[in-house]
Length: 449
Ligand SMILES: *[C@@H]1O[C@H](CO)[C@@H](O)[C@H](O)[C@H]1NC(C)=O
Ligand SMILES: *[C@@H]1O[C@H](CO)[C@@H](O)[C@H](O)[C@H]1NC(C)=O
Ligand SMILES: *[C@@H]1O[C@H](CO)[C@@H](O)[C@H](O)[C@H]1NC(C)=O
Ligand SMILES: *[C@@H]1O[C@H](CO)[C@@H](O)[C@H](O)[C@H]1NC(C)=O
Ligand SMILES: *[C@@H]1O[C@H](CO)[C@@H](O)[C@H](O)[C@H]1NC(C)=O
Image (cartoon, rainbow, N blue to C red; front, top):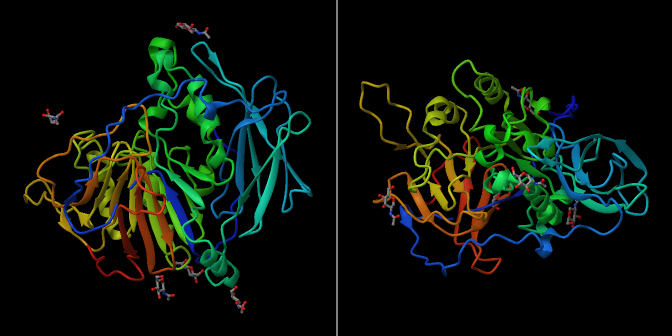
């Protein structure tokens, strides 16, 4: 399944951008945190939990979520599900909640998975939006309408208005970079897709208001021949549309967007990436396209980490690292975020690209052209935390701790971004790991770790 030809927008300039992630920590070099968490079992929320509540009203839209709808940040894809009948696929929107003067009409689809039949899934593209503007939007028109809002990203760092806004409201994430594994429906009997619906209702309080940039994880695959389900990623691709065609990709699993001052590349750990494959060829063409004058920050998202020192999923990212790491160094990627491992870890700037089978140079080395790798698979899940670490802590690992949490990346300008990881047990403002990240093109000095 997939989107239609979402249009390309116009280029945007430098901006201040705060990105909220789903897990993360600060420097000092080779720290294994001694923080001891209270023992809390990973207990599944029951189907009647308050966060799964169905919104009131006949056929009321639920599981509302938005993501960026184009390459540049001037479009939004609004998605929602109606349970009883299709209803309207239209979205009314505008810059005042009292005057929703624009309308866009989307599409509706359903899918079946074993004996589960989804609700009516709507996807609607709102395009030609103004930069740095609050929009209100209504779904469920004609039956049980619900209204939400979002903000488009700023166009230019030169905008005094944008700067003032950021000064007044620091550290409020504006976009969520989600590194994969959404509902975990595949872990329930018959891979019960009802869990996609409960998860969709659970996260609606955030996903309806700010774009979540999606990355496919292994729990999205849902390959279940024993249930007659042989098309991988069916629930994920039916429910979560992404603007992959806008960046010249042929599949929703790898794509890029530009959002304010960041160029964000999403890679697919579970699609082919060997030489000559579509993903390989796309990335080979994509990296030279990144214009660091227009988007100073180059960030990559993937599910399976390359630099991980936990005894979970150890070296699973190795084959992709072998294929793509020389490009990350050549094009000076600033940061790589991955999930998969249910814990937090931050690397030094390292690379491991010198090896040629016969020279024996197979150990990661410090490299100021290389990204910082952050494993932030600690958003929370029913499988619990990964606590078993490799010992001793390898040289590439700067900080690691097995706690649930999230991180905020606060891009200040083209040279500086502040990064902080927050563990769930602490107060909201506490950063358990934090550091200033220096841009690899505009300020390529070593960070102070
Ligand atoms: C779906 O099928 C499974 C067995 O494969 C059965 O246990 C379950 O009750 C069925 N659910 C529905 C909603 O029919
Ligand atoms: C820039 O924004 C600040 C803070 O809002 C304001 O005091 C100042 O007058 C603005 N300057 C210009 C040129 O817009
Ligand atoms: C990069 O963007 C700048 C600013 O828009 C532009 O002047 C420059 O030509 C672009 N570089 C390339 C190689 O396209
Ligand atoms: C940690 O992982 C190692 C390697 O897989 C294993 O040998 C060891 O038993 C594990 N320790 C615990 C406490 O599970
Ligand atoms: C960029 O942001 C950093 C951190 O806020 C600040 O110290 C630096 O002066 C800024 N650079 C410019 C050119 O504004």
